[in-house]
Length: 415
Image 1: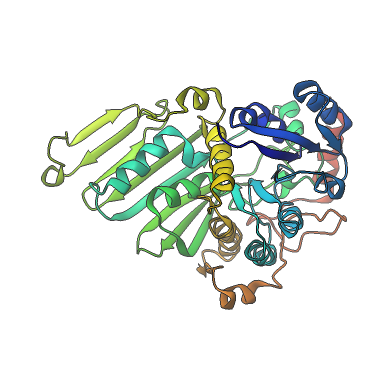
Image 2 (image 1 turned 90 degrees about the vertical axis):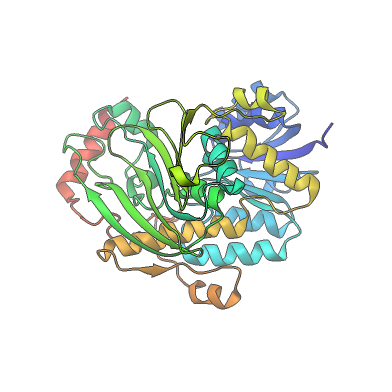
């Protein structure tokens, strides 16, 4: 039996969806934190009266015996809380993105290097079965050196479904309304980095623009439907990825193109993997064309099947807990996380400048970190109400006083 990890969850929207997965990995949820009382009440109903509930993060991370925390608060507000936990030598699992500004990334890496605790990004898409299979194939060597890869995370929303839109972005200054299309890059880029081991060193980006209907709650949001980002990598390969795209239809797809052949998950085909080799480079005993559903071949296969995001949520928790138990670096460590965030942030600047290339810093190096330690540019409203310091958050800025007033009137009318 694996050692039990005493675990706390901060943010019980997304965080509550992990209760069963944590328990399946022999985690004990000893404390939860949220400003919404009904979420705390729901936690007690599911986890029992023994779980401690907090509305204050400072009190939460001082809970006696707490070993590790899961940060599931707003997308762009993780770095501050991760640093405070690391300073107390509490292990950190961070959902979504590690840092919203370059300066936060610098501070996070410095805190992680000083801490005795482990930091891991909770990125689940690399752990989907088809991406696990493509990593196995690539690392096996038969495909040869990587030349080019594509990663596409596409998550459109019906702009006229006002109830759904309001549920996702309940007020005008909500982070989703100001989210540049490059920023939510983890689901498109992380699988390619994990499959290949390649790390982006230079990026450029272009927008795909189409305004939302004026009578939609998407009217006061980012009107770029996608950002197309090109990455030059440290192994001379090239990635082409989206952030969170919004073109039809919903999909996530990945392809790796190598010297001897290529592999991809088939769009809209339920996780099937297609592998093709050149006729002269087909491995002995294999077919040059293969099309199949990959098998897990994992001792926890039954538990993986119960978890959301194609089993990825279970495998994220397993990897985090195992890294704590074994006192080793996790697969998605602080350098992996801040590389993803740097690509997100700097490719948006490229997009606003019509494709100007930006170099991605190597945050292993203090000489690279110091260049960005005061770079606090952000497209988001601050928790203190401060205005964004990057405008616009798409390459067209079209909001007017009239459109904002119409948006707020529609928002108030939706129940």
